[in-house]
Length: 368
Ligand code: NAD
Image 1 (cartoon, rainbow, N blue to C red):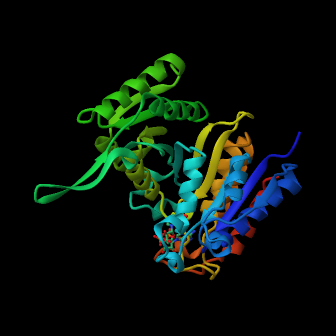
Image 2 (image 1 turned 60 degrees about the horizontal axis):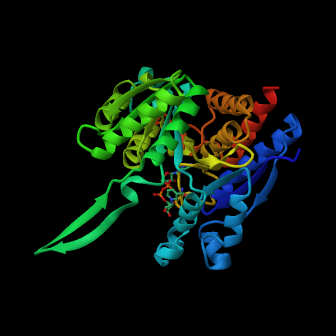
Image 3 (image 1 turned 90 degrees about the vertical axis):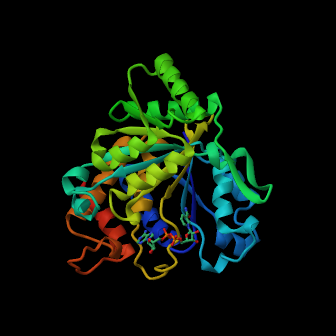
């Protein structure tokens, strides 16, 4: 059987720096666990624009469609701020998401005990937190028509349309139920069925999919505004939350920040299963290219490393190895290693990007 394939797109700014640390981990899995990936590397974002005049070439897009998973660093930077909208670095990322039809965006909010004091909430509220927010990513109010700004009489009117089809709701609901089965078997669906027809349909379809295919999973419904309150009050009551594009945008950012630094947050965007049964998949840290610290060895590589852990779990069926990698990260943090973004007010000497990557590789060695 051929090795699983991985397309690596380091991108701009700190993207290449954090991705170098992921490459060490990938090499470790090949050398120590017999888990070898066919890795190809290519350009996306500003660096692709510099080389080819476009943030994503058709050839790279084609490669992304034909690998088992794509791992991306970050795109963008001040150098590209004045480019035409059509060739801005972010367009490369948006093209990947759109053409791969990645409709389920997975954003875990996981709090490592060693960083519980870092949260804006009390340590006992977030300590041990491990929840997953699934945001519908390709439809809803960010895409619905009609949209635009027009004149009505003497004033301008801004219009966006929240629109969901039954099948769009059903497929993301299935992603949530499938995921819940691999976790704690519990899904909470959030919308505003009290004031929005699209919310009424959302609730109906989620309930129907549940009854027909996933009755073994515990399902609850919550209005999204109440959900925001509950997420800050007692987030550990949730396991998997599924919601639409707009509410998911807000709720996933809120939940993510319960756990501390942007440098810690991974994500996955999944689409329909391919012929080999694996979902189309793009893994990337939540953070951007951090131009303020790029090239200084200060970036925290953990978000990108944890994104690779998600790839191990969701694309390569290596849940135990994903857990091994997450535990290695936990060990290193418990030992007190901190990149600059994780330094508390008490100060201390931060480690560099490469020192953090090396320490995680050593913790992987120690796990054998
Ligand atoms: P950012 O996430 O790049 O940075 C925000 C702050 O967090 C900065 O102070 C940065 O130093 C810090 N930070 C981010 N990641 C870090 C890490 N791994 N380790 C330590 N500190 C980290 O967001 P921004 O400053 O708003 O955007 C910068 C550029 O990135 C812009 O061009 C923006 O368009 C782009 N961007 C790209 C993505 C993406 O590629 N997915 C996402 C967001 C922003």
